[in-house]
Image 1 (cartoon, rainbow, N blue to C red):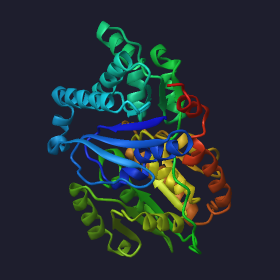
Image 2 (cartoon, rainbow, N blue to C red; image 1 turned 180 degrees about the horizontal axis):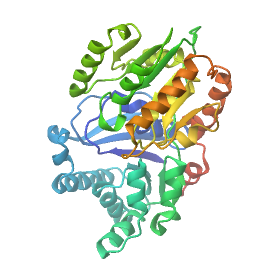
Image 3 (tube, rainbow, N blue to C red; image 1 turned 90 degrees about the horizontal axis):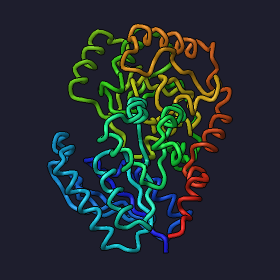
Length: 391
């Protein structure tokens, strides 16, 4: 019997993770290759039981202090997580395949132990890396310590990265190149629209106010636009400090109160899907993204995309029918003034009807489903090879 375990050791955990790569990969891999699949939460601050008939979720141990970043990254805590995860595998000889996320002391240390003491177990390392991390990993090791680190990384059976841009960067590292695959993140089959029609709505989704999300840029854009009969939806939790910026924006622009809507966090997946269905345009001005799961969720409903040159932008905007990649963007050094100008000009053309974002909506949905649906992603050759490796 082949059995899969995904070890999750990245701090907090919630039901949202089950609809992202953390939950979707084990769920869909089980359908194709395994008799059972399980997410094992390692030292998270969450005690909830998320198990379902499709996927088991268990706690290895609870750690209330894991929300503190300094504690989460401490060597003592990571070593504890490595030891407990390894002991879990010793107690569960039925586990044949292990999936781990990110290159950390935890993932590398655990992989090293597994391959030296349980060599028949098959390890998949999902990098979940943004471009900054990819460039750090691509630099050739010079010191003995760094060479040793990469030799430990290379003991896994499979390494994957989510975007072609980062895949091309990482191929230059000889420790990773032979085991490196391009595997995008994916989404479940979109909900049927049940008669919901597209409206003149522009939407952004994420944690609003996080520096990496660059949300203030969109408020500056809205000051320049003539929205006419269009509305702009900000969807997601709001960082406390950003609330003051939002209050100031409405104080200075009271005429936009009925056109600019902050929905707050939307945890009901049906309601979030309805927002994507209703929207015609999705925009994300992030400075960097490892992938950008909200982007493919929006694209799965045919939304036209406006993105900075980061994450999955180049992978999902195949040509101008699918959206627009903002020039000179996607870095910490991107110029806010130029970004505001580029977004404003392009959005105004859409609002004025110079760009017909509905023309290729059906084609967008079809193409995005072919490439980014989880049921298709888990059928990629890398998973057929890894999932069928003889134990």
